[in-house]
Amino acid sequence: QRQREMLVPATDGLSTWDEARASAKTCSRCDLCHNATQTVFGEGPLTAPVMFVGEQPGDQEDLAGKPFVGPAGQVFDRVLGEAGLDRGRAYVTNAVKHFKFTLRGKRRIHERPNAGEISACRFWLGLEREFVKPQLVVALGATALHALTGHRGSLASMRERDLVLDDGTALLATVHPSYLLRLPDEEARERETARFRADLERVGRLV
Ligand code: URA
Image (cartoon, rainbow, N blue to C red; front, side, top):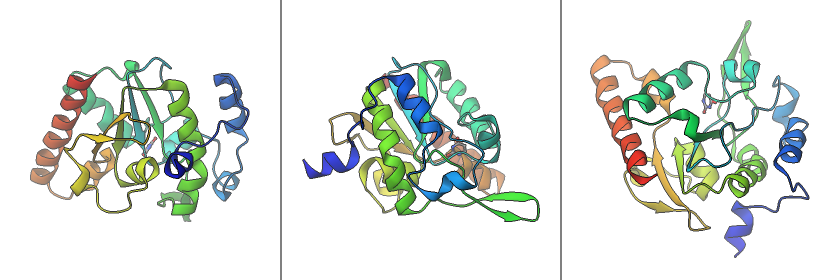
């Protein structure tokens, strides 16, 4: 019971989806709101059978106010399509709703959210889960897995396993698409992209 309360927090009086989204716009549950352009809330139909959870918005998502529209989003869209999945039928969100970065000259360089930021933002992820009630949640990368389950170890041991969330919802864990972008050689990129595609094909068989 304690674990459930920790991972799926109360809705804090936000009883409609519009109220929740409006309230998220002015969220100051952690300090990331001070430097980011805006809250990037999840996107997709509330009837979606599957919810994908990334890490946090990147530079382009921060400016657009939409999740997964930058380089990682393009990889995600392409491999989703190759796996026969339609992004329009999915709810896509992030563990943390504000962009965290450090400035290098004029460039904003992505920084990983810390445990406190993930914990503060878990309220919104819990709320999205309450409203969407997907059949299947997919954690894209270790930060999402941490936010959803409290698991802080490696992703590798949790991948390709049928996992279950605290409320009984099915969970799959796979890599974050930006991991594929960071791989230095083409052979590794092709191999890992094929594995990611296989994970997404598995998603397609489940929903
Ligand atoms: N990386 C993420 O985890 N989420 C986004 O929305 C974009 C990049």
